[in-house]
Image 1: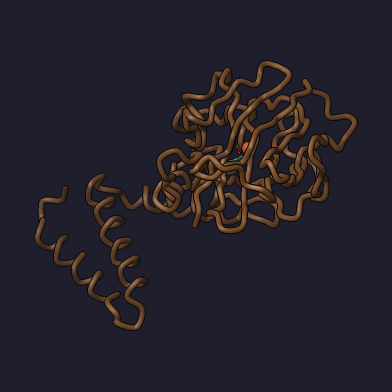
Image 2: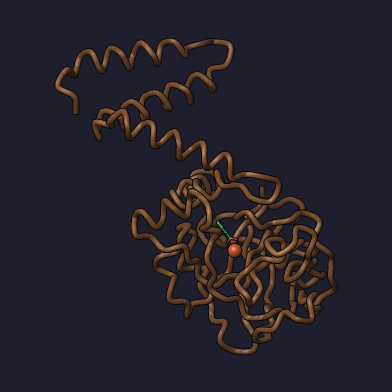
Length: 273
Ligand code: BEZ
Ligand code: FE
């Protein structure tokens, strides 16, 4: 901490006060918190001018790496654990409900709706080990939820999402709807461990700090139903060696399931609004 405690405190209070406005109290509160925490950071680590310039160069590079198909700021938020914290704050599950985790950058709205039991393998060159995923969508009361929508998407066995290969490619992503019994079932291939995109500034940050870019094998789900809160989550392969060190801190032990056999079963429990 700085020796001249009072000037630092007075300076912080003066900057905070400059953002006080009755016109938008929420904006004031958020900006005052930004000031408090950023000032505390500079003071705590006694940040040098060169380090501040390096931070600005880094954030500029993060912005430069963003385009229509790549969002390096989301990747930064993910690898800093902020995306997961945001879910903890905004989507804390009720006891007994399935746990949420990060959406990630590879969700594409409007995936093709397929019938119960269908395959999500659209590219015949996909390869991999066939796997059936099945279960029921239920409410907290255990009653099946009919007409629930399940968006599913996952990485290809080559370690890339379809849209990383070609923004218009659609492979290993689909939407299903539960019937009257709340059941879902589809065929896919066993997901593989893969690396988050690490050829940009976020990858440099990981390498500079000895971190790896691996995510444990998983299938993404977005479960929605009338009268229920949307659930954004993954199911993880419980045998992945990266479960304890996910590059984006998205693993919840309750979401790790057996995927080694022909069929993987999991019941989603969603919460009424
Ligand atoms: C994903 O699981 O698709 C993902 C999540 C966060 C960052 C990169 C990828
Ligand atoms: Fe993923």
